[in-house]
Length: 240
Image 1 (cartoon, rainbow, N blue to C red):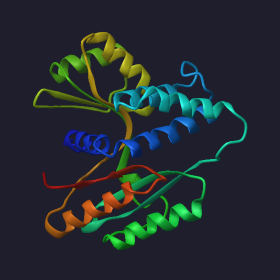
Image 2: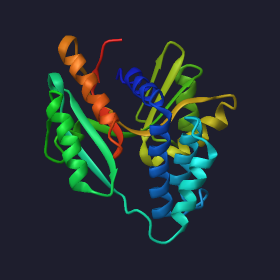
Image 3: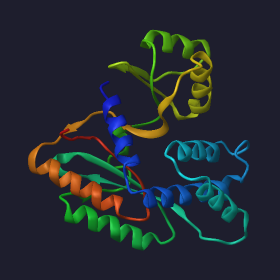
Image 4: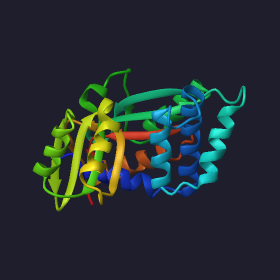
């Protein structure tokens, strides 16, 4: 489907962000997951995935521990998820996922980013139907057939597998995340995941060049500067 490269590029861009911002976002997300589902990672799979992901992005243990300790106490901040969808430069599609304690502020901030950077907010559901919500695994590995066989032996419902330059990308339903990860790690003991995440993967891509590409880069940078923004998904194919 040609989506593996864009998934990898999005992940690399995210991990290249300022460390303090990365730590803050992980801290907020871990706090919310622990507050809602319990502080035990063995019983709270969403929390366990977040902790594993944070460690992979080199978030210090004290940041993780502080967020979990904060979730143990009564009261605390009341963050809620908020999603905004719209169209960026050149007609590309954008999803912005936030965690916020003030919806009015967050909506205003996101709308301003869109308005100043050649984009337009749409109604809820305006573009989400053009993305697949999938578990995504990226790793160096054997050919796709060996990976597919291992997953089928474990009765995993694989959505797609791509191979490119020795890199394998597996797409599976979100409900199969833990099962697929366990199966891959068991079948290939030396496997090291470059990406292991649940993500919105675009069904199609929009190639941007020139001024549209530059405007899109500015939009992404502006959204990245917002404290409430946790993830940005888009289908823009940018130069380089």
